[in-house]
Length: 431
Image 1 (cartoon, one colour):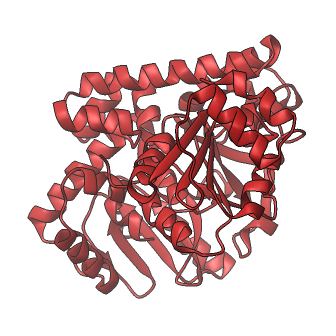
Image 2: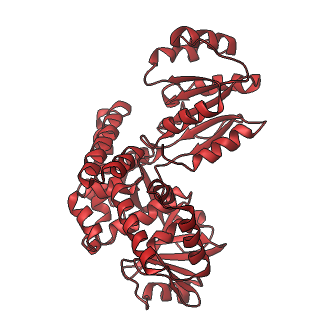
Image 3: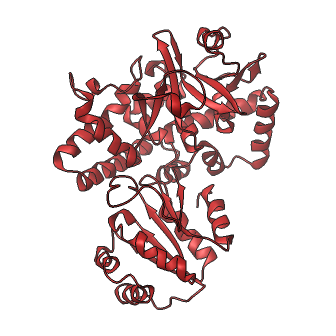
């Protein structure tokens, strides 16, 4: 079983005497159900799971009398549960967007304090009118994504000693020994190709077959397609799938800004913007907003009508380009994709570390790939295959916008000047 960071969050929740109902939200296929089931078996004597996709007959139960005694009776009747013991039982409600009223019923479980509750959903924000996106007072919400790069390193067998050494080189701005540097680049290329979806990671680490990676990703994308048909009307499905499938082509442009004209020639934003937002609220894509000026707080400077769009997993993006992208990654020909894959890999890492994504551009010659708050400072991040010691973009950001800290992420080893640090791209996990 893959080691996941969210396990520690679950343990801390369990150990809190004042714990609320816990909701875990995240994209389809990131391992929510598997991690909750494993946790339930380790920390509870009894465990009741209701998956509203597989048990739709239970949806009306939660729309009627939601008294806890009545609910337990109905659950035991439908699921043939033999034991539901106070203080020893976890209720796990899966895919609760299909039964919004379960969130109301859960209040009775929390107030009763006899049973713990974990909920999960793959489509948290798609219908806010009936499924609010703000937590109820008795809820705690956790986000879960596919494996981040550090979790992929754990899965690949990289030891804690190596991780500690890498952190030491990062903090002290020291070059990584050549052999370790090359090993880490190799694993990073793997991560760019495989991504972090557990089904794909397990398959690759057991077979080391890159062809199977594309097949697995294709299967997952087909699931997304199927879900869109379920949750959207035919016209909205057609527009949403066009937006989704345009993402790789949007990022492969020299100007990676999302343009509705690439979805449909000569179309206006108003025709597709709600469909793109649906993909965002369905956790299928993430959005990187352009800043009007590169300063903190970023949310106040964001231009919400100018943005880039990324898939929520780097492996899905790579596979969408086909075997050619896999070869380019592993043979040093990333320039064929206009930096799309390296930049998207960093977006993947930042997003999974909980960062909101922002970038800045002023004209065709000035574009900062990302702006992040690092060590409490406004920091420009440049992502390049090779390190250019004289980067005009960073110099311009320093001279014209008052920034005084920059990070370059490239395939080269660690180096630094007074206020510019170059890190190998795999060290983005420490930012």
